[in-house]
Image (tube, rainbow, N blue to C red):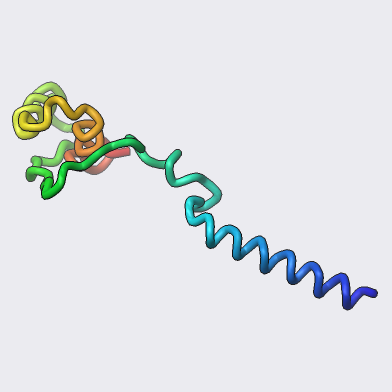
Length: 96
């Protein structure tokens, strides 16, 4: 009986593994959608983020925001994109 039980457990484990693979949305036990800063961002075709001077937290944050806003002026009406790209302008402790 124990052998049959072991085989059933192994098959259940295999099915669960297959389901997780098919789902494809879970990363480290969390849903990918939940990990995204802006899950519904729509990135325009051919969009390329400008090169930003990285903010490390050691200069005036207001100056950094002004610089960021100026470089992203063409996308001022796409708030999710602005939020999504902002993280790329941060580094070190400021990015955490």
